[in-house]
Length: 485
Image (tube, rainbow, N blue to C red; front, top):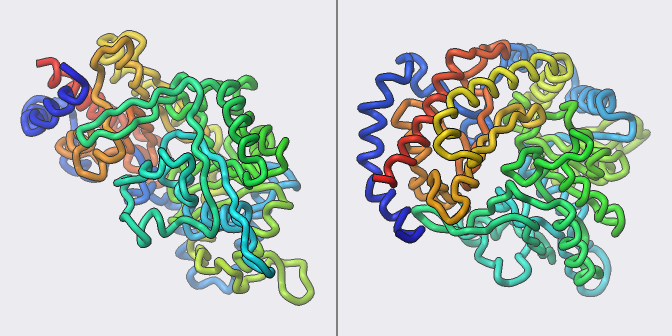
């Protein structure tokens, strides 16, 4: 049987798989009626963001009748960033993390529009890694073999979709990660980056060679900023900072270009990550994910880099007199997050600063549950599972791409395109069990406790967590069994 036949057979077995989950797994899962549809394996999905804690809700409700001016909340966020990272760091808040990305490319990477004569073209460099439809979709892909790389990736085609994000005279050079595998998987097959064996030093050399080829045009480097093996960031020489991040930061510093880190699913102020150690010029967070704020984005960067980013929002300083944050009309004022989101960011950042011990304890407990519930799969595929806790990402990663080692057939890997087409059977299987699914494409799953595994005050609920994790493990076991029949 060839790989494409494996997935064809899986697709043909879909209804039988779901029936088996409903008949055999659901009765033994321990799912309570009132948990169905409420219990999720993650809060890092834009359509299903983390539940708001009671402290965040109270602060937002109180601010609705407050006389406090909006710039005061902006200043408090800046203070919290400086308290945690140092006075050389500053912040700007955006309506979403995607808006923050847009602003970074617009301000830091695209050629200037003003002045006589035709504008030149610029190119930013990005790794061929996971989730590239987000941070690498702002330029026209180079080399041309990658021009179809964003097809069907949950984006509408044409000017109203992914192409509409492409910015003025900006290209993106896509560089494969050294040590990664790029195999075709899925019922709707597409190339899947498999990154657990990423080689930071080899990737740095490859990126440097690429920059040298385009040195007159390269304007920035942009990568993800996660810290787990499934995303390619598992190696950390200092025990905290991903070697791959630091390698990209070193290159950016050597060529005097900005390094933009997309850390959408990260936790600001985590003791595991400091932007200075990663040599990041600006790091971007999706605050409605594990951070626990309302839908909004946060950019944290070197103060000199943040000046133009704050100016483009209209919040850098008063027009006359200077000194305090303004609330004016910058070029990208449409990305303003508004009062409620800013208040929620203040509440979330203060809670994170005061509760790092609780955060670590929560992830330790969740990790133990994942290890226990995945014991059968770990035994079935020796060396095939990588289970990693991440305090920085406030979750536990389960990567199973190595179950396909030595040309064997492992646990089915679904492409991002499968999810867009409704053909990701992990997602479908979890929904059959009454569980809201995490992002589970490309053989990598991040479980976070922020939607249904914590109470309203952020206290971990192990009984609920175990049911959710057990459901995920049983879905993977059932899928693994189905293709062996």
